[in-house]
Image 1 (tube, helix red, strand yellow):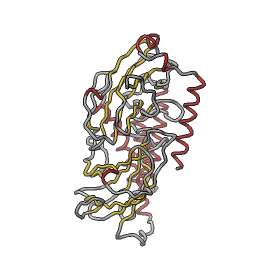
Image 2 (spheres, one colour; image 1 turned 45 degrees about the horizontal axis):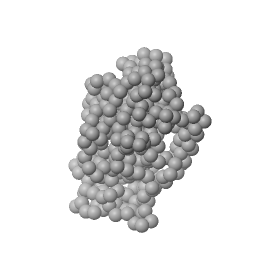
Image 3 (spheres, helix red, strand yellow; image 1 turned 120 degrees about the vertical axis):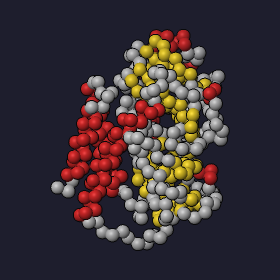
Image 4 (tube, helix red, strand yellow; image 1 turned 90 degrees about the vertical axis):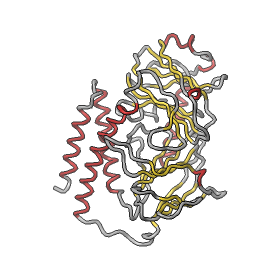
Amino acid sequence: MLTESFAAAVAEAEKLITQAPHVQTDQDLTEGYDYLAGSIRASLQMAWAYDRDFPYFVQSTGPYTKMGLDNPDTLYFHAYIREDAEYVVTGKRGSTADLSFQVLNGDYSPVDVPDSLTAFDDREFDIAEDGSFEIRFGPGKAGRNYFTLGDGSAMLIVREVYSDWTGEERGMIKIRRTDTTGSAPPAPTKDLMAKRYTVAGKILIGRIKTFLAFPKWFYLKLPVNTMTEPRLTPGGLATQFSSVGHYDLADEEAMIITVPASEAPYQGFQLGSMWYISLDYINHQTSLTADQARIDPDGKIRYVVSERDPGLVNWIERTGHAKGYLQIRWQRLSRDLKPSDGPAVEVVPVSELARKLPFHEDARITPAEYKDRIAARQAAVATRMVG
């Protein structure tokens, strides 16, 4: 059977899911099977989109194809490229907080993070008054709107980042290879289909193994219920810093995370499950940007992570996840961050929040107001996904 290799990979992937070290409850396993479904879908898409001669941007991850602690505020796109060809990227800049580009020399693996050969945001090229732009990637000499592809260049990643979900408009982007424009690829063959199914299976296994291993490198060796000082995000993103950690909370406990509101155009906080993916950010407030959060009069944001509803505007719902990952990102920075820009973490009983939070009464929110916040999230994601 032509699909035999992929079917075998799915069976192997299921074993990886069921044997994952963090699986302890039925909920863990149910979420694992949901993660597996998204990974299958994404792997097939990536295998069929692998065309370095006739490339196009595809969405790398989304609500149903999550991976790698995906950022709820980001639309991710990628296209496959080769180092010896020239590509033209055209588009129209939306009003989102950030638009960045990165060239990798491969993909993530269970033992390695790919090298970032080039990383920049849209401040590095010219944009017309109407928002339109054209940039080129290739073997030529770098210039204002030309970016040299280094040895091993294999993938171009684009990130479009929202800070105010309801007030920002999505842009547009497309890619073409200069010497194949106007021609067509060869017709698909049975051998090509067999190869793509095999590649999809390899992507699937690699994807699951990689992102089960990834947290061990960057999160789980840290003391629980703490967060790191701001540091450059692993992977070579030149204008992005992050603070990370992992939590373990009882139902009667709350984690207060206090962090200064940054002057950076984007600052966001989120939770992730032990599958190293975002929690449900559409129907629950499991993430907040600085624009979405309440900033206290002293210039600080105080997130409250808890299972119980504390009746506070900056409540971060852990949706039944007693353990998980914590991440703050700052993007489009114009300076390196210092320890004083980072978070302070305290775990307290939920019953003590009124005493522990200096602006507790001003931060209260009614159930009806909170419901409106969730409705706004649902509408914003729906608009973003079809924009």
